[in-house]
Length: 233
Image (cartoon, rainbow, N blue to C red; front, top):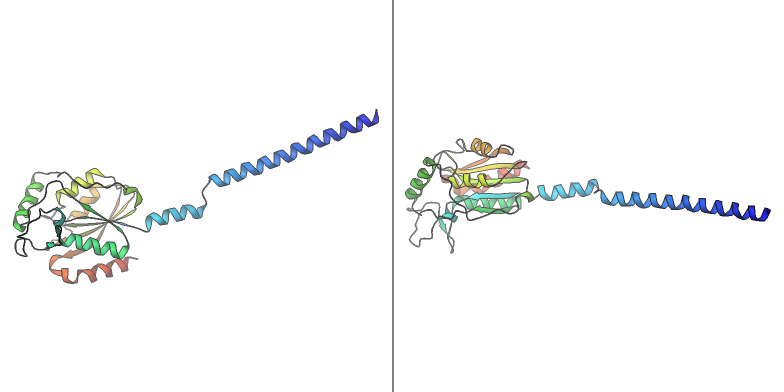
């Protein structure tokens, strides 16, 4: 009788010990799973830094949107430079310098309909588009805007305004939460009201004046761009 009671006692103690051990192991496993499911602060920081570290340089350029013309010259098309495929204009050159200095990616705004090569002609087309509040169709499409937080935006001053294809572009994309740094090139008007126009088009973005470059200063503009970018770091 005593031996049976003793055996029962051993059995009860053993079951209780097993239950305690099983519960503790389960708790440890659940905690480990919970820890693995929550990203560490370091991984969050690394992910954020990887996005912030590479900017996107968007530009609208007369050259890349000009119909190829073998008869182009410095008189009919000032600021256009043949590159073997089409033309590179000052806006594209500035954008490339910024991308090189910041290790950023480039994106050109391209239109379906090409602009004329003649300087006076393109001024008239730009004036008509502005008067009619035209939104030219775009042929280039930005697929990965969410990969970037900082945007350098390079564009010319056309008639004291943004070129109308730029309006088409901002109508298409949402830059909420982005920082847009405006870079303008002009014959003398500078930014005019263009920065406020961008802010109006993208009210949830942080829009700031970057640097204005005058066409007459293009021979020394690279030094200006590099000095400005380094002063911003």
